[in-house]
Image (cartoon, rainbow, N blue to C red; front, side):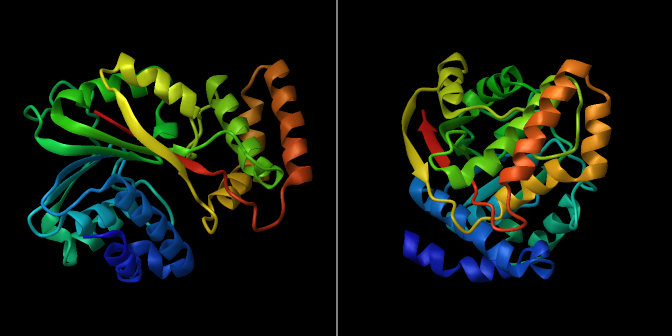
Length: 284
């Protein structure tokens, strides 16, 4: 399936997601972004894919469409099926499973691939995919160990994440929101947000050889039209959540993050904060 064919199916794929009932426009833009990633990675019909950090299945649905009836997607996430809002992971997975893509997908929630009981045979998968999930990891070391763990199972790694280099001033609000959350996590105040370990592209490239992978491609990805800048800014400026997180921190760290939050409040817009760009890396 070529890029144009897959892109033409984006509206139908988006409409099939459980979250589409809450924010149809947002779901469509998120789906189109993931279609562009899969097309760039050239994941084709008949492929077997291990997806780590599948979340609510935005990427899972696109992968399932790309691999076709003869392909297979095993979608793994450490979170419980009850996690997520306004739609839980379990609700979204059930919606996908009940649709035409269901037979191509196996969801495994509450699953950590670092658990010794989790395993697959050598090269059981053509591709292992991590798309916008690496910042959820508790530490760079945890990400490195996970990449090393899956190395014998897949021939190829397809990785995508936000790029910490802002590129332009109108992306500063998203960057500040990400760094504030990451610093709070690093200082020991653990939240339930999307950002725990905001690793740079250069940091990822340093981890890959340690995990047994050799990078062989990748590049920048356009993200205009995505809502993640607004989402992360809102998470940082939520008064109740911010006060609770900062209260648990050492005074010096708390004052540092309060000052950064002041800057964020000054530069952020009520809506339409431009998201950071993203990047892809492929490896073998």
